[in-house]
Length: 279
Ligand code: GLU
Image 1 (cartoon, rainbow, N blue to C red):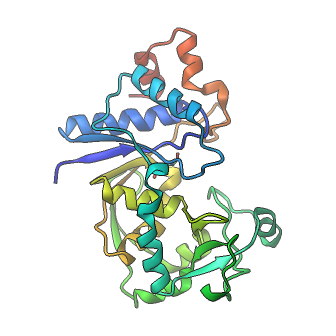
Image 2: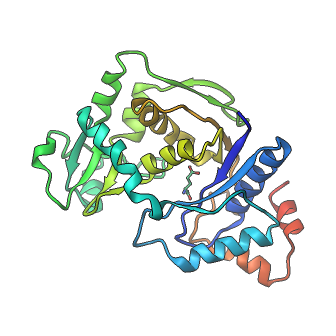
């Protein structure tokens, strides 16, 4: 299959140097392979996603000299498309309803999670069944049951990024301890959450190679489990180094000082940005 990758920002803030690196790298890989480079807005968080950020992202990417193939894919325009997958996981008895708030989860946590960008769910609602679902509940993946479903034959995935290049099998201990029961459908609405939406869209968009930052490597096993549960093909994964700030921390959306738009206003060029990220 011809190489196809995507850049998949969430329009919840400005792009910074780290995003630029990711987009440029994916784009360059696609062009070198005479493949496709697609753009996907991961805007299922309808409260935090804003049209202004979406527009600024398009401007920044064009300024960087990037062109993408086909129209921009916006997850918010496809919300119904994820429902069969959620229904399938429910049929397999792998989901449970959860009414915990973010602060409930933090209060139940015993130790802070180093390096993983999300809170591992302590399992407060894990005993509940779907019949007890209230309209305001989220749906979580029951990871224990999911792993049992594979009956010892946990799937493997291919990684081509430098740091972890090779074949990786999903490890139960790692998945349970570091990832936990992720949300697949969000509170209050029949809205798909990141893990499932992003993995399914990679399949729908025909992505052969997911190119993204190495902070997301640890989430890959969950996406691999979800895709295999749903009988979908797996892409290859390529997790690249992160662009860090002067203190060595990963850049986040809130680091507005490194927003691409500011470099743009200061008169820097796309070539300067390439040099700054080491391309
Ligand atoms: N939307 C995610 C983010 O902005 C990226 C998801 C991905 O590349 O898989 O962090």
